[in-house]
Length: 412
Image (cartoon, rainbow, N blue to C red; front, side, top):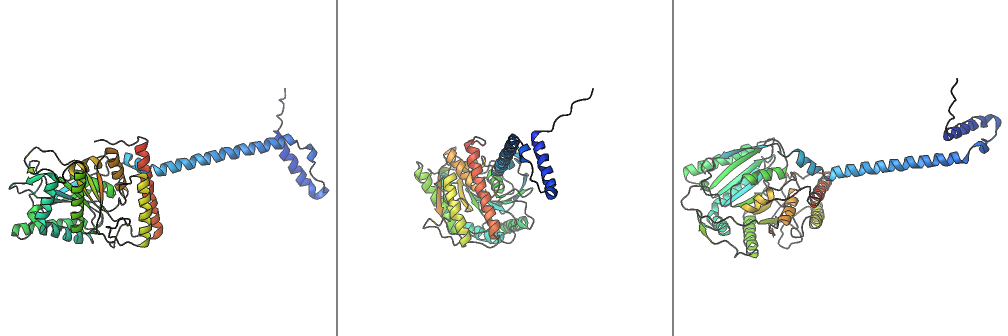
């Protein structure tokens, strides 16, 4: 028994009739017999096309939202999938202090953490200025640090009063060799009795691969031993004597405002008195402050003002300039903030501010002398600089979203 043939769909029939009419028109001159085209078929075709267009628009919108979400949350995804940051190894260089560090020796009064990536050319300038100032104003700096942490005397210990922790973030040049050279020079000065190098220990941390400035600073902070910890950029853009005096003074005022007397009661280093409370002081180049002495290019000035606006909106109104590479922390403050840090690259400073707000860590901002230095990692064309700025804005949005949604949580 023959099977019945299925009739073509109305829409297909209408298309066939139209096609026959077009083919017949040149010879007969007759128009397509519209009377045989069912108007309902046209309505069905239009409705089908509308549904398809609507579905495509929904799919396109969903794809755009997915791509946008992946872009915004990329730092969080990167932090989750690369929790180890590539790992790091440490050298304890004999920069005049005792080789190695002992758990029983008194902690240094001040640690400097210096992240460095391909800084072979600029690092010697920074090292020269920094070590010279620590030598020349040794007693005054030590007294100011001790007044903040409440240590009256370190006795006759030979332990270094200062340490400098350099973090080589996977450099491809001779950055680490420069650090070793200066450590050897300090050791020789100490041996000859001419340099006072015994009060400075130099340590070197190697990131196994380039992991970003945030990851490098975190690695240095968690390895530092000082009662006060100062983050210093390797480019020597901030005047070290001026900056150190101002952040120490800012820390004194901050601790006083938080209920102290501007300095802790002095005690012997062997006592059981607890560490200074969590606190942080940010050096600032903000143009909105009269005390800021920065001299910046017009493009960087515009981007800085825009960045300040988003910092106030997304992070905190207490800090205008989060990106200056000169920040002082108490030991407990550094531990609280950097143990919660997720961002690994340029915008990590903004997460520090958000974490400080969530934990209630006191923050202060002081103007410092600062000048632009050739060789900056951001000395690029305007398009690239704009893309970097957009990436930093993305990171701030990611930080605020992750903490607001509970994706990231802070712990003491």
